[in-house]
Length: 307
Length: 328
Ligand SMILES: Nc1ncnc2c1ncn2[C@@H]1O[C@H](COP(=O)(O)OP(=O)(O)OP(=O)(O)O)[C@@H](O)[C@H]1O
Ligand SMILES: [Mg+2]
Image (cartoon, protein in one colour):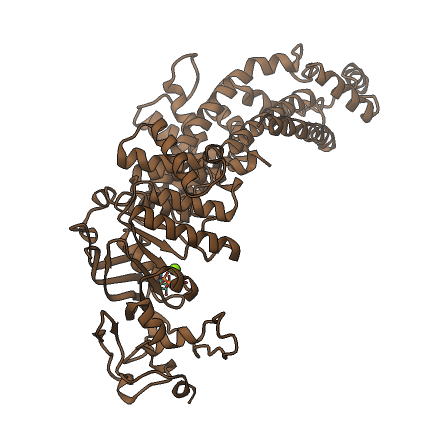
């Protein structure tokens, strides 16, 4: 197990380097720059600004400087929010974004797994059909539309829940954003879980378990759950990145103080430092979480662990 | 000899999109205490489904009717929860494929111990200890270490031993083994059969041995039942059926199997294919392939009738079956 973990960590390093490189250059290739405003700046001012942020140096020097400083934890200054370091902005926004994202992730995974099991056990009966409907809504309705609809229904007409904002501690304000974020994730998880549970239930070792008279409940919890979770767990990594990126949009719909607000602003304004910093941070986060997922995977499937 | 299992008019039907198919029809037989009954027949003849039905293990689209009385209880009339009080305790089953019949994500010891926890109310640790003893008893070396490993760490033969140990934990009255050696290589097969012989003797369990292999039948079974297209077509003692079969299908099976002793003899495969269950021939289901076919075989179905000496056969032809005639 330990060897397996070490190997996985080492293999994540090159991926991280590639990801940073790709992000850096793609961002520079995109047309426009941080100082293109409504009105063009006087050439001399522009030149001074570019020199101040080292944008006048050859791009590969900029690249190596960036990577070198990043390794030391310095993501450089924000180019649009004057006077702010990128790491400061990250420190303000990230805790909230992570809290929101992880809450939605955990809620969605638990609900998805349970719903998938219920649908599999009641294959082609009404709970199965209800799930199909919920899944369809979750997958086809984009998050900005779902967010607006829920805000309108529960926040404005029914007035059951706050429609947005965050006053630091009113957890009811999180219900709608978490729902919007969690829904598509739960939908995909439940479909995967349903399919793999149905497959597992048809396998020979489940027949063996039933032949021993241990009963349906133990059969499900002890014998079927772990093997059926395997495909689900391998989706959790990609699923999480999907969910975290969705959180950037959802935060701005619900006016939440996460990194999303800065990120969308930064992307529109070509704030190289902030966009890159956020992206790189996300990449690292997703790599780490994928690593955790892989370890869970190895725990679920002893054949992986021993390889 | 007391009967431990009495099966009467067992029918197994599967519902499919375009109607029902009957995999087992009107199957009746008894199993005596400590007896070994071989069930033979071509692929698809309903051998597995008949016994899966008795164990309550049919696929979701399957239904079983009839009776299967074990120690005074009709297993087919029980709810799943009631049936769970008997499965694994009074009646146990070993499956064809040892590679996929054990749970890949649970330790062997755990998979055995849970049977004792369930039926004997033992504590986890006591059950684990007994499980290890049983592994040792079926000839698994270093049983304690094996109990602590996962199925993929064991060879096919070892896994089948594990399956046997698991089935015997509660000393069941009836042990059903569905082609227990088919997936194993020949040397391991022989060891496994030896093991069955000693273990069923030791435990006094009646054994149902589902198999393709007439060599296995000859070596191990007391009686045999031959199935064709979901029905029993002949049953009786192994000696009687081997030396003087009454049904042309049994006759054909015997002559399509190589014997070590008479290697000079030509093998005669049964011509044609087993019928599909959706389109059974009229009359006797075997008549299109039968070398002894008579006009009435095409229109009427012969009932299973007593032929003396505890033998039964379902065939209109009552004369002696000879190879010469078969060759015509
Ligand atoms: N779930 C199912 N739905 C429909 N038909 C089925 C189902 N399960 C089994 N059958 C059919 O039942 C028939 C009998 O199958 P069974 O498994 O008993 O054959 P068998 O005699 O054990 O053959 P083999 O020697 O290959 O194991 C087969 O024709 C099979 O196609
Ligand atoms: Mg079979």
